Image 1 (cartoon, one colour):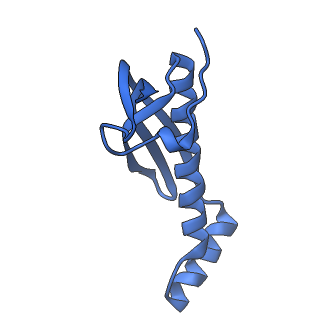
Image 2 (image 1 turned 135 degrees about the vertical axis):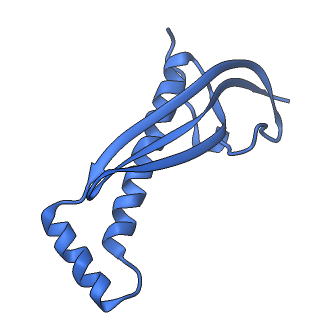
Length: 114
């Protein structure tokens, strides 16, 4: 199995890429990760929540978690030989208190420039 590289500019939430045509559809690919907030982080979030406004610690955790799931999805696509992923979506589920799983998924494809 070849390991192609999926470049970020060839990843889309749409089902086509401008300037490219899909030559082969390889199937659904997923990247999933589970993260939890540390006890110290929970205290910091609670304090930020008391003050109000943007909860920067949670924003950072969410960004890191989504990015990790996204990169895992691209790795899976590359393992299939894809050079692009279309129809990308995210899903998140609270598993337990302070613990969340994030899933990034899409369709791995091979595209060529037109």
